[in-house]
Length: 618
Figure 1: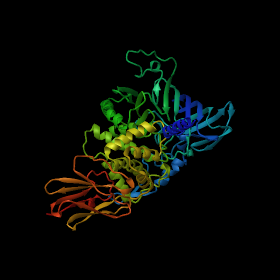
Figure 2: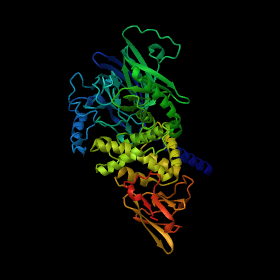
Figure 3: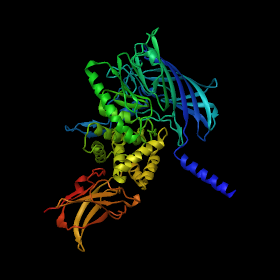
Figure 4: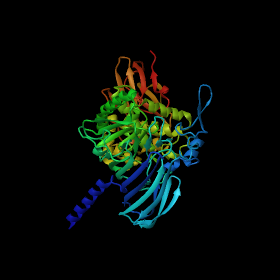
């Protein structure tokens, strides 16, 4: 009996350890039917939703996102944009103020005419044929349930709606600057995510998204002259044609005035589509990767650019898969549309054939397409990680051997010097300025990963990124989840790094101080001038050409990174974070030293690099 009890205990322990990354999460299945009128720019639709409440909680209400209600005068998005536009960020060379506008929005929503506004109008939500009580909060619909959804149970809902496509302002809409007829993102009543922190009914102000993992079947009926591109995989290519059909297949002309396009996507958390009568499609099958669809307006003068674009994405993919994990879906679509670049599962809207934007948006298939973090709470895990991956991949395809992340570091330092930095833990919608959000989420977020490579070693960082992918894809990881992966792979304690870098605006500034001879020993004084402690690499170059890398771990790490190159390395006792100074001994006379440099790799986000280097005069 005792042996049986021990075995059971071991089984429970092993199951618990294995189950740790498998935090419960909700599940959803959409069957959506849409009938689009290209004359009125309106459509009707219905959703059949199956919803699995995998939480331990009883839900007496649910929420839906109705994003397009933001595109109406005096909406929260409109007011927020105009208020931020009053803030002066800096001054130009003529001493004229530069305002904190999002140049894509400004006051455009205020000036929309009735036929140009957007709206999502839900007509009914029914469960078992019974209408549920609806309460509108502009871009959020609250649904009071007549019967609560119990823990670990499934319910089905029927939603009917009609919408008007707004004139394109931000991400979504019609008739954008490039002449794309419809960029259909954030277009359907989308269920709000309920997770271990509760409901996430974030109004649509300007920023990021969060969704329930599930399966989508979407049927779009539209004028037969329109080519449609979308998330998911087209199910009836041989019926609609337009280049989706395999080579050699002859497509029968459609009877009537419309075509129905049938798309399906599994294990995704959103769905985008676009449509235009002048679209053309370029296909590129990647070796050991997905089939790429590049869908763009047919303009002879730019055809070659899109061909170069597709070839570059094919060149980039092997590095992306090796470094960040394999892309798991059958296909991916780059769709000309939107207002710049915006990612969605299995597709992106992209303004033109820009290589950097294309790589960035595709990397969002990892961050946040597969690692579906709550973008509103942790935008740096989305934009920052994608920016890091974009810069690394772009350097690879360009064979650029310079420091790939210099723009992110420069942006971060400029943010610090502006005095407008806010902690990265700030909710995406609640930053005081567009400037602080962008420079923080993108720039400081990317530096987070590069600098982590400085702490643990770049080869260890690569292992961390792959383990993060293997552990947390198709889930909703938070910052601590990432840090636990990093700690397990590196063997270091790293919570201090997250706490300083994400939850504070404390900065790093190390300096080379005096050089003295103490008891016949050369001592270099190093100074911590900033409030954020870090481990320190110090390269000492001698006049005979030899070099030594002096490595000083920081005590909160409880570990040391492995050697990163062939330079002779000497590991010193840890630097206690409470101490502002550190005495570094070297086994050479002062007269032998040519130069002392803190962080020659430039990965340390030191806000004042002027004091990082000291040249010893002859």
